[in-house]
Length: 219
Image (cartoon, rainbow, N blue to C red; front, side, top):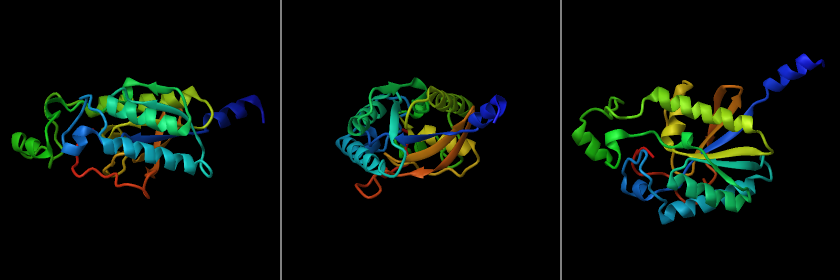
């Protein structure tokens, strides 16, 4: 194989990245939309992170091991990442602001019912108020950070701890149907050059404690 053909083959090799939503936060437990609010994990959220880390570690006997851990800079994600990295023995945790949650604007801190009362019909019609981060901006930064994580290289599979809004946006922008992303679940994405392709949903702790949020909140 000549040099040109080797380069072409190399360019086709995808980097598979695991994106997980953080553990339950204090506001998740209250059903509040978080957006950029910097809310920490609940006790259950820390337990979820520890159990997900143990499940990922056990899975490395048959799956590609986690080689690097990236995270949103918000506390609920960063704490989740630190717990997972500690269990997996992967350091350091690498923060990146592009992994932060979608800015919910005036909906930040409100419950589902409060949004329904103050913006009738918006949630049902998938509309967003003035001040909510535009979809195009979320897609641009989410794709950009995955491309950069893939380009960083290294041994093993990259793991990125982010938020439900980011994962759901990446799923929708590739033409797949929207779906809930409970705490400590996520998706695998293949990144080739600047192309990001969803591979499938992942639930590392499916056999342990319940990870599903009781209300569809952003965060």
